[in-house]
Image (cartoon, rainbow, N blue to C red; front, side, top):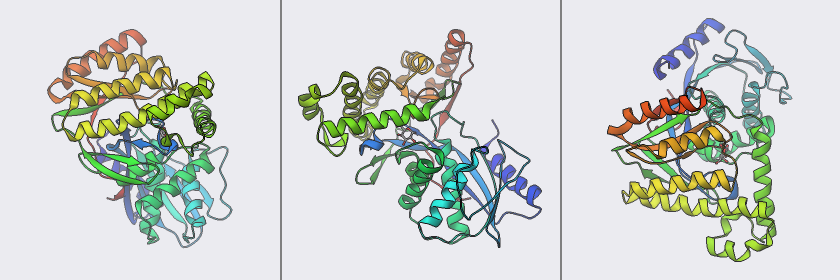
Amino acid sequence: MVPSTDLAAATASAFQETFAYPPQGLFRAPGRVNLIGEHTDYNDGFVLPMAIDRAVWAAAAPRCDRQVRVVALSLEPNEPHTFSLDGLKPDRVIRWSNYIRGVLALLERAGHRLGGLDLVYAGDVPIGAGLSSSAAVEMAIATAACHLFVLDLAGLELARICQQAEHEFVGTQCGLMDQLISVLGQEDHALLIDCRHLTWQPVPLPAEVAVLVCDTGKRRGLADSAYNERRAQCEEGAHRLGVAALRDLNLGTFEAQAGQLSPLLRKRCRHVVCENDRTLRTAKALRRGDTAAVGRLMNESHTSLRDLYEVSCEELDLMAALAQSQPGCWGARMTGAGFGGCAVALVDRDAVDAFSQTVTTLYECQTCRTPSLYVCQASAGAGPV
Ligand code: GLA
C-alpha cells in the first residue's frame, strides 16, 4: 500500500501536472469502520463507528466560471471529466462523477452559491469493502467546496448534504452514519451516535487492543437494491407495530407485539431492536474497560446480521469465524452494509502478528482468495491538510 502521506502528495502533484498550476488547497476525509450498530442508523437508532487512517484526498482550486474539471486518480487517472454546475444531473456513464455532481448540486440547492472547480482526488479506502469509500469521497469534495467558497457549514449539515447526494445521485437510501463519522471522527475514539437526536459522544478505545480490519476480498455486488429493500422492510415493520421508527421499541415491547409481523419482517426487526441494545451496551462496556463484554456483543451482532438480517455472505462468515477462534481475539463481526467487504476484529496488540498470519493462511486455504488484514487507528474527521 502507498503510505497516506505519499498519496496526499501524489494527489497534489497530479493536480499540477493535469491543470498546469498548483492547487489552492488539499483536503482529507477519512473512511470508517463501524464497531457495532449495523443497519440501525436509518431506524433512528445507535451506531458506534470510528474514522480510520485511510482516507480520500482532494486537491482543488476554484475557477472563475461554472465548469468543474475532475480527475479520479485511482479510477481514470488521465482524463479530466468536465461538467457544468448548471442543471446538474446524475451521469449514467461516468458513474463515479455522481458523488461529486451530487455534493455540488446539493450544496447549491441548500442556498450556497459555488463557482467552478478544478479537482483531483485519490484515496486508499478500498471501494465496495464496507469502509465507506463513498462517504469519504463525498466529504472530501464537500470539505473542499466549503473551504474554497468560504461556506459556513457545520459538520452535521455537511453530512446531511452528502447523504442526500448519495440518495439522489447514486441511488442508495443510506443512513447518516458514514458521512457523520467522516466529518466528526476523533483520534483514539469511536463515536456513539444517536441517529434520532443527532447527538454523539466520544468513546475511548482501549490502548492495549487493536482494531483490525479483515478484508475478505469479496466486493459487494447488487448491494444497493438489497440495502434499499432492508430499509423498506424496517419501515414496514415500524408502521405495522405503530411506531415512528424501530428505535421506539425495546426488547420487551418488541417481543410482546412481534406476532403481528410476518416471519421475515419479524427477523429483520428483531435484528434492529437487539442491535440498538447491543450498541448501547458496547459503549458502556468500553467505558468501563470490559473488553470481553465488547467482544461478545460483536460476535452476537455478527450472528444476528447473518441469520436475522441476512446481509452477510460465506466469505464474511468464514472470516468472522476464523477471527473469533484465534487467541487474543475478543470478538469479530462483519462491518458496513454487508454482502461482501470487511470484518472487524478486536485483538490484543501483542497477538496481532500471529492473528494476521494464521487468519490469512486459513482464509486463503478455504477460499483461494488472498485477504488483506490491517490495524486501523481511530483518526480525526475531514478537514484541510
Ligand atoms: C452503509 C450505509 C450506512 C449504514 C450501513 C449499515 O454503510 O451507508 O448508512 O446503514 O450501511 O449499518
